[in-house]
Structures are given as C-alpha cells and as structure tokens.
Length: 114
Image 1 (cartoon, rainbow, N blue to C red):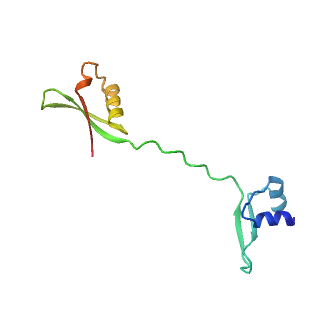
Image 2: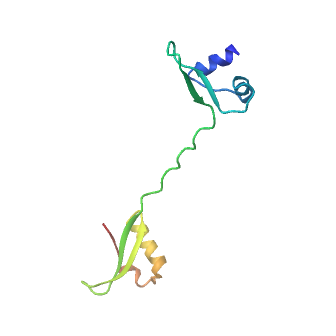
Image 3: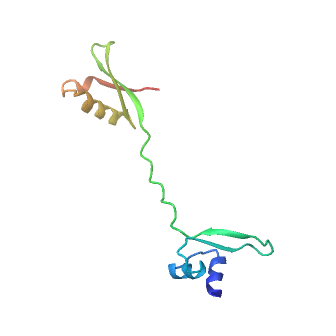
C-alpha cells in the first residue's frame, strides 16, 4: 500500500486498474482522494480516468468566393458564392456546382467575398 501511495504522490501518475481498486477500497472508481501537500491538511481529488481525446487538426479555413463568368471585356455574369480555402479550389468547386463546360472555364473568375 505504501508503494501505491508513493506512486500517487509522484508526478508521474500511472496506476494499474488493480492498484486503483486497492486504493479506492475495492470500488471501481476513477477518482482517488489523496493527501495534499505537506502541512495543508486538505485532500485533493485526482482523476485517474482516460485522458480527453486530442483535438483533430482543423481543416483549412473556408472562405467565401464570388464566382462570375466574363461575358465581354468589362461585363460579368454573377453565378453565386462557393466556399473554398483558396482560389484554385474555389474555381474547381464552381465548375462542379454550376456545371461549367470546358469552353467556358477560361472565362471563370473567382474573387474573395470579404
């Protein structure tokens, strides 16, 4: 029992389930009350359960892009808004969403919608 208590007070807190049951008094509990630091007289609650799951890496932030087709040199036909992380993927999303043919793809313009 002394070895187990020294493990609890140690900074590297790794107990097996059988040691946990022994300290918890045979109850299947994930929390163990241990003595606080020297002279404080208060117990502290230490959770020995599974750690919180690590956050997954976030996907690239999606931006809104205004998509237009150039009709003449200075006139544009507005198609709509697509969401993509960059200009190339915005153009690809617009081609798929608005079913733009191969002959019109060179006239496609995607601008950030800020």
